[in-house]
Amino acid sequence: MTIKKAEKRIKELRKQLEYYAKLYYDDDNPEISDFEYDMMMNELKNLEKQFPELISSDSLTQKVGGTVKEGFEKVEHEVPLQSLQDIFSFEELEEFKTRVEKTAKEYEIKNPTFVVETKIDGLSVALQYKKGKFIKGATRGNGLVGEDITQNLKTIKKIPMELKEKIDITVRGEVFIGKKEFEKMNEEKEVLGEQLFANARNAAAGSLRQLDSKITASRPLDIYIFNVQKIEESKNFNSHYEELLYLEKLGFNVNPVKIPCKTIGESIEAIKKIGEDRESLTFGIDGAVIKVDNLYLREKMGTTSKTPRWAIAYKYPPEQKETVLKDIICQVGRTRCNNANGNIRASKGCRFYNI
Image 1: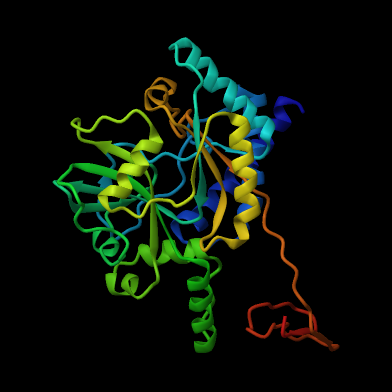
Image 2: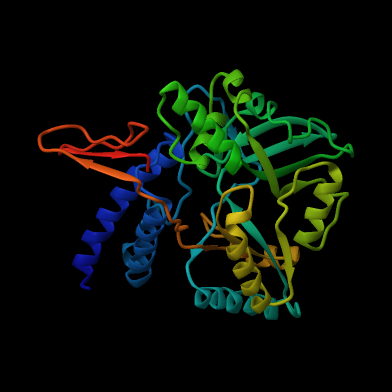
């Protein structure tokens, strides 16, 4: 591809991705699947890698998607809530391993280890505690500035208002709606003849970003904590896994899938196992996260403007499920085409029932 053609395609992709990102992050109303979005983003990353002179700071490859919704106070994050670099093959994971080992060798760190966790499909938030008491919570926003949703977060039963130690700490977690709870929500909407939620992630995000906390309280929101953002100096940990166990002792609802791995080979096996168990999980995931366990090594690896260099997200292909088409009735003429819920429409005469 010539640089002229690449520039044209890059502009097209950036425009499309900005549009879809706004629908996803700001409006909680996605128009395309996560997989389609990921493929477009991956194409843009590859083109920018091939033609680095075309990289722009306003590209979504260089910044976190999302803005602050009107009506909420802005919160500047003490520690940026970054995104993760996505990968789609184990070959890319080997490249990640090479980068980790290079830095480890430079700082004489032998045999770097990893932790593999589920990548929960929800809305990322930061929770701040002073002397063990919950004082503020915010959405990720653009990574640097988020929305103050403290009152809404207080309605989530799994978020402790007071910890088991009087400690100053800021943690990061993912707010989500479980699979069964999401199905029940849509069943209730169907009975009322209301528009169904597109997916559990956007239902959770929309529920959490309500100006009326009573609406948030009526939704079955849950949360898993997965990272320490900031902690008082009196607490000194060497590993991420050690921190996660400490968070559990404090009373946090920590991500239940956290697998310590001695090598990338073990990490790959953990990723495969999570993929096999994906359907049986009570919550939705869209990938597995591989993190360097050694906190000192993390510090030395550093971050880019958008992503940490010490973590990466392996994205699974979209789930495929079988369904039964019980009946199709076709008729001539210009009519609407509805399924049993009245949600599919077309301009030609075809009617679906009981899909």
